[in-house]
Image: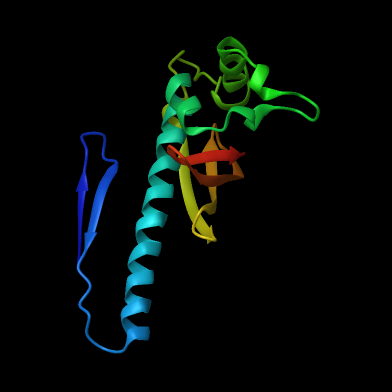
Length: 157
């Protein structure tokens, strides 16, 4: 049995699962593994949703909190030498939608995410793919996540 709790932003905070130790060791392990896989999947998808929301809202601080420092480094660049302004300019260049509607309103809320899939790899790596429709154009985006010291971190986009 699972119980979910959410914070005020709708992000999952905790998932509790009660696993009865009945059946064979293998059956209990399969149930335990399924519960842990569901927890990790939920955790990654919550982080991915926060990252997309940060990009749409132009929230560089949250975006950088969820991203590896070197994600935007090109071949041969040392991302550890990027200052905050350089990182924020790369964030705006690569992530913040710049489109405007004819009436001048921001077009960001016309973004639709659909067909999301997640592939967990080794329990500490995950690949999230989804279709992103913005300004009537759809593209398939993929983000690679790694579980680091401070939680799930996007390491590639």
